[in-house]
Length: 123
Image 1 (cartoon, one colour):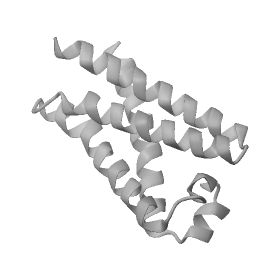
Image 2: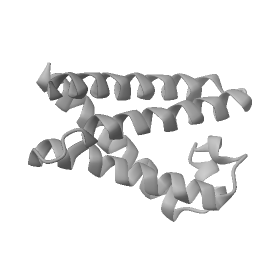
Image 3: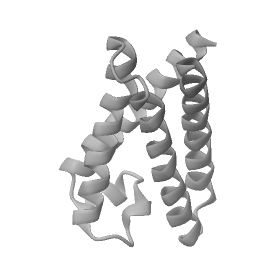
Image 4: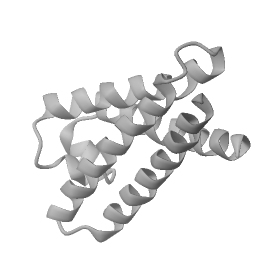
């Protein structure tokens, strides 16, 4: 299962790095044009704060487990990203966008898998 956890972690790292960089550098209009429509109801300072959290969580997914230091931070980062995905799914649902909701649920499931695997490996 460790290999599967690393593969899913790698996918989450790619997705959330791209998302975090986009949210931290693009304008509201550009984000919406590129498909990040879930940000529409929120002020840009909040979007930028979420971007920072996503980028910090990416570090949290990798660094603790790779360095064998404070390994509890890896599953904690996965839980945090899962919470972000719950918020994103709620936002997309309020905008009546079933495709993005499905994508958010898939990412939430991946976060839950990584969190469960890494919490289990702590014992």
